[in-house]
Structure formats: structure tokens, C-alpha cells
Image (cartoon, rainbow, N blue to C red; front, side, top):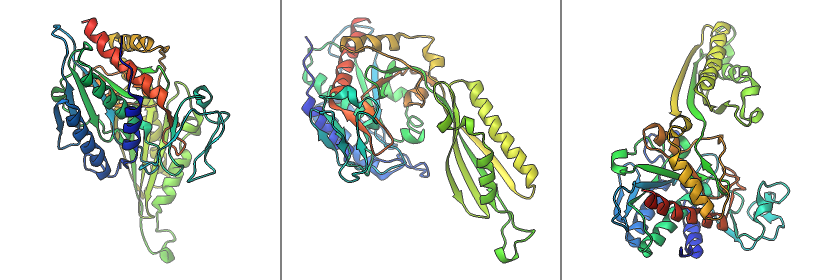
Length: 415
């Protein structure tokens, strides 16, 4: 019979981790992109050593790795890796003040540092399902950071559990905590040979029972516009205002392919930043689609709009650069669904119904899978991510931990 998860330890770890501001920064060229990520990475390194994990290492690029040794001499057991990212989204500050709402009673949850921010069962998806749960929120002005510190806390809690219960049979388990997932750099410097895994799972999903094996394919796009500068008092017939051209470019993008107008399996073009001045301006965007043909079509839309502006204003210089970010993991996982099927079985053993949808985003597993390491994404319970209203259920995180325990044993038993 499986020993129960220590929920007090899980909660304590989660609250400790979310207090550290680990927001990433796409403008930084360092790895990790922000100093705060180092604070959490060094803490995890110390905690793993204190737990008794083997091969604990924090490398120069900000990847913490460790091993939970096998408890069985059974031959041929695949090496599993569990991964979670330490950074939080760029839109809002981190450094949360976590609040635990014990045995949630269904009444509105007021976030005290921003009383206008409230969670109710009528306006907050899935909250009604969690009546009676212990709900954790931030105070209203920051991210909670459950994306993905819920995943970090679950993995650390399970590592503690397995190291304290060596009678549980499992093979070699590798743990990895990485920086900069939120800016699509999470796996760029991870050495797969050093990770040493046959199959991996990211803990970065939302819905209870979620197993993701289909994600967006993603590109980034940068449009640089060089106008003609002159004193505005002498500008007639001479000035070419790069900011105005940026506005024309944005206005010409078809609204029907914006995130605000799309859902389901429809991709989008999403401007995320405009920076610069009248003389020179930069527009940054992300392009998303589930199919490579759809992604190529969105590139073509951007190029067509730029081509039209070159005709309208030939004195301006437009530079359009695309960068590959990640690809739909389905292209590889559908060739061998065993990692997905065993995850579904582990979820059933935890008393939950598994579910898979095409997620409108990507995970570090998208990159890893494309590089040859199968890596579905599993739930850890976070909700309302990338907003001040972000929350998580302690009971859902506990189920995520139970799932990992079953998963480790299943891979051992089915070897």
C-alpha cells in the first residue's frame, strides 16, 4: 500500500518557493535571464542535497539536476526524468505573498492588496469544483507563481517521499529544474546526454488529470522599421515616422487571427511589444499554430503586410526576422504513445480520470520531444495563470504527487 503524501511539506515548499521573485526577461542575454531565478535554483540545490539525493548539480547555465537512485536491481528499467521550470511570466512581478484559504467555502475570495480583484464561483472557471479544498492565492498585485512552482514543489515533495521510503520499487529517476521557460528558452542549454533519461515528463499542466501530448508549434517574429529622422519643425516632405508605420503594420494584421478572436485549434499572430521612437522602431510578435502549414501561412501574412508597407513608404527600411521556438510534440509522440498511456494509467491509479486536449501553448517538453527525448506534460493544478488571480488547490497538487509515485512504479513494473 502506498504511503500517503506529506501535504504539510508540499504546502510549505510551495509557499517558500513562490515568495522568491523569478520573473524571466526576454531582453536579457544571460542564462538564466534574471538574478532572482538563481536564488530559487540555489535553494533547490541545497534542499536536494539535504534530502540525500545523488549527483546534485547546479551548472553554469542555471540547470539543477539530481538523481534518485533505483531501489530495485531489475534490469532494463527506463530512466525517467521529471522537469519543472523555476521562472514566472514576464507580464507581472513575482515574489508573491501566498495566502492559504483553508477548506474553501464557496464565498468570494478577496485578494487583500487589490480588493477589486476577487475570485468567485461564478466568474472563476473551475473554482466551484474546489469547494472544500485548500486554495492558495497571491495577495492581488503579483503572480502567485504556481506556473510552474506548483510543479517544482510536487517534484521536490515526491523526491523527499521516495528517498524516505526506499521500499517503493522504481528505477533511476532524474530530476531537473530549469530557467526561462516563459521566454521559450527553457531547454536551449540543457545537455540531454548529461540529463541521461530515456523518457521525461514536465509538470506544467493545469487541469486535474491532464496529460498533454499536443501543443502549438511556435515562432517568434521581429519587425524592425527604420524611418527618416529630422527636426519636426522641418519635417514636411522629409520625415518618415517609424512609429506611425508600426501602427499601420499592427492595424493591417487581420483581427481574425488574433488571440482575442481565436480558440480551439485555431492559431494566431500576437504582437507582444512595440519599442523605439520616430526614427527607429521594433515590433515583437509570436506566431502560433498546431500545424506547420498553418504556421507558415501566418508567416506569409506578416510578410505580405510588410511588403505592402514597403510599397506605401519606399523610403523606410523594413527588416523581418523569424525565429523557430518550438514544435508540436504530437509529431513525435504519436509514433510511440507508451509515455502517454502509462501517464494515463498512473492518473487512474490516483483516482482521477485522465484527459488530453490540444493545449494552446507550449511546454519545455515540446523542445525535448523534438530533440529525441519523449516528454509529455502532466498536470500540477495551477489555474488563472499569468494573472494576479492565479490560484492552485493543495489537494490537486497532492494528486499530482500521487500520480508521480504511481508513474515511477509503473515504468519499473512494466520494464
